[in-house]
Image 1 (cartoon, rainbow, N blue to C red):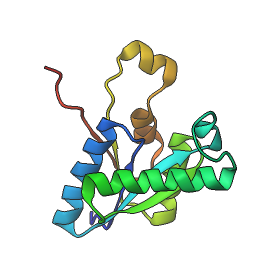
Image 2: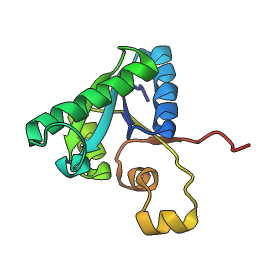
Image 3: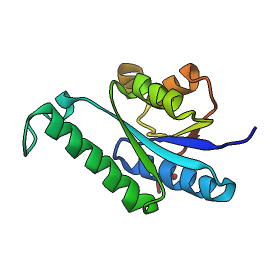
Length: 141
């Protein structure tokens, strides 16, 4: 299987940074296109500082995603901000960009919290129609 486009789900967390760094290395080795996606809703930013109109919030969220991608990998990644819940949003972007592989971070939140909140990594691996790589968090010392 040739990997031409890698899609990385990024939520701004340290595990997402680790997944992005891993995917960036793979993209460099294979010459693949690297796309970073974040699912977002105007409700995510309610109560935050700054303007509260949806267009401004959307632009700020896109700038935040681009800033995270630049911080981790420089300017070698495209960004895709989708207005949706995490799993459907990532899957929609994967279809739009023709992703051959989806990469996401693992949170290791524990079984009880995972049962209550669900797991994006798990749901992506079950629902995606392309392979999903879950990059593990480093072992806690």
